[in-house]
Structures are given as C-alpha cells and as structure tokens.
Length: 151
Image: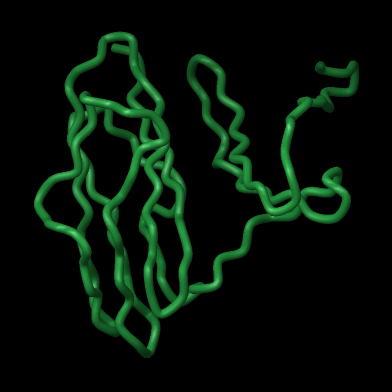
C-alpha cells in the first residue's frame, strides 16, 4: 500500500533473523538494493551487517548483465584466508552462468578473485539474485542482484 506522502507498507511473513532485499525500480531507474534483517518482535528491521567486513565485493550489491557478461571482484582485506563456496541462485536458472572457476575458492589475504557471470540474451530483461556463501574464517553470505534491462 502506498500512502499519499509516498511512504508505503509491504506485508511480509518473516521470523526473527530472516533477511529481505528491498529495491525500488521503474522502467528506467533503479535504487540501490537495501538488505534488512528482522530484529526484535518481528516488526523491527535493521540493516544487515556482515561478520566479514574485511571481505569486499565490487560491485557490492548488483550487477548489470545487459551486455551479456560482467565480473564481480572479491577482495580479501582480512588477515586470514577466506573460503568462498559455490554460489547459488535464488531460483533455478539456465540463462545465467558462473564461469571461469571451480569451487570452493581459497582467497589469500590481500588478494582479489574475479567471479564472472554470463547471461543469454533476454529481450524482456530479467532479475535474479545470486548468493555467495563464505565458509571461513566465519560463515557469511552475500547477495548480489543480477539484472538485464529489456532490449
């Protein structure tokens, strides 16, 4: 429901600790994704914090695959190796592929790893979320929205 002042309400069935990604887009504009986690009593939402703040993804939240292929950089600013597990998609998809590596990947301190994505042409565009799980030194999971604009 959108109110006269522009604020809105979205009913969600969630439990304590669940995460949700919110993003607003029109035909031509997209907001940055906002990741929130259910906090106290299921009505409070806080920004998601990641235990491995020293691991940086560039871009951090979304990747435009309109050109057919793009790369995410994983940068390990941690003092210990980071183990990246096999990425998974929110929904099963045949039109997006992760290329150029086998999993798991051990990323040494101060090193960078390229995670490449390819997509088949989609004249109507698409939007999908890929989850990048981290196994150690602490368990974590990062989400990246993959999208292609309609052609």
